[in-house]
Image (tube, rainbow, N blue to C red; front, side):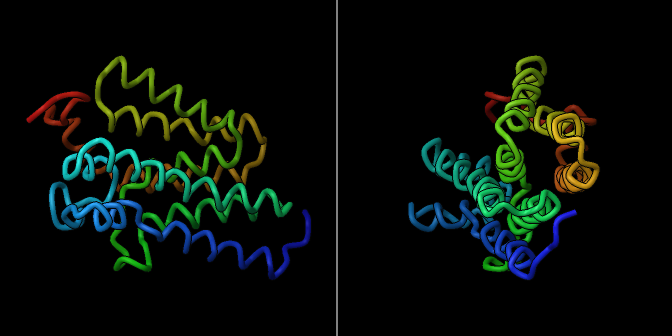
Length: 201
């Protein structure tokens, strides 16, 4: 295993700080929209921004959340860090989105940022998870079910591509946390009250 330097370890909190930049809150402030932590579902994520400000605001939020998962991982790779450090940087960026230090530790549910982390590991990993999401979304029309299913298979995709138990373990932790953050969606799915894609009201 390559030597882990002090510089490498500093990349982990840097990843967390980048993840802590809340795209939803910043977009809403710049576009004169209500605070997503106080309106709608009270979740600072792209879906709630869509309710509050429409497609353009939601698309910008989604891109920002995706990039803050992608960029720290890509930066760690470009700096030729060990895979174990890259995995920790990705996990830190994801946790920063969920618990942002700049915004009272109240963040979003993390799907877009987790997807950005996967694309940071490799294009193949990201596209594999997106493919699962698309299939599930087309079959069942539940965005939350599609996201959770896609993230459930993400550790397997990561392990099959990289053959690295630590990397797969970090992705498994991200998946477990995502399921916890989506526990209300899971309950609505079980109750049959979760809204479908394109459904109004």
